[in-house]
Image (cartoon, rainbow, N blue to C red; front, side):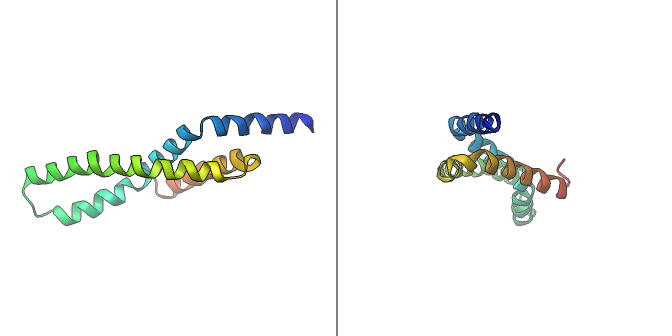
Length: 110
């Protein structure tokens, strides 16, 4: 079993090393999955407004809304990822992304 333990140790080290990038990928994937819901919510609120105003609101939503969400949520996800016990961090990352893939399939995003 030393080979399995060595492999797990190597993967855990990679997970810890790239925790910042993994958390950003997680947040970006969530925004892709739930962006349609956010856009639909905003669209229902501004459907009666002037065309140029709707474009302006959409630009604000993309630049400030999604950008601000990414910048504020990513550090929180990063800290949560680092709080997971080391030996389980790789497994948690894999399960989390598999679950996001399941959600994507369920929402017919894929």
